[in-house]
Image (cartoon, rainbow, N blue to C red; front, top):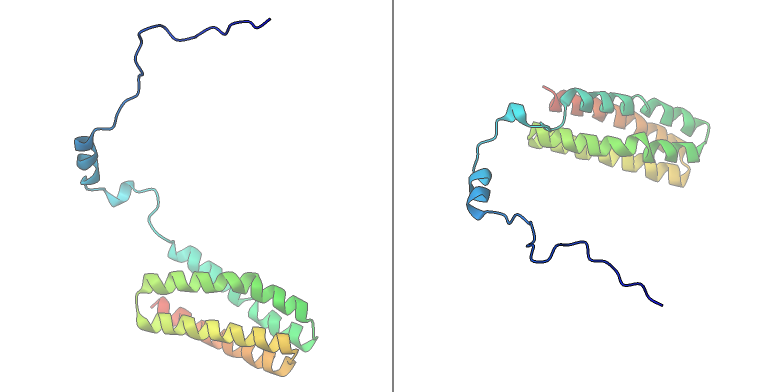
Length: 147
């Protein structure tokens, strides 16, 4: 035997859905926003510089690991801290807004690709050379981007 289900709504009541008002939408859309009231104010330069410094401090480790022929650890550094370095440098270059900063970021990216290629070929001399060049180019990038 089936028990009939009980309706929980009163008969004749209408839905209480508030429909959006287009005029209020236009007013809100065109309201001037005070930048001090914004929750996100863009990337913090100090945080970006700290990230670049931490990643740059790992570059000498690449040379030491390449001398010891520990290629998997070299790959780990390239894909880990130095992988996020590229994203951070692109953010900083876009904030700086200069072509020199973008070109310097591209140079460091190429240096990191050279380290990666040398580690895949297991060529320690080329890997050490590329790591040194990457460190020098990263320093140039910081000077250009944060002048």
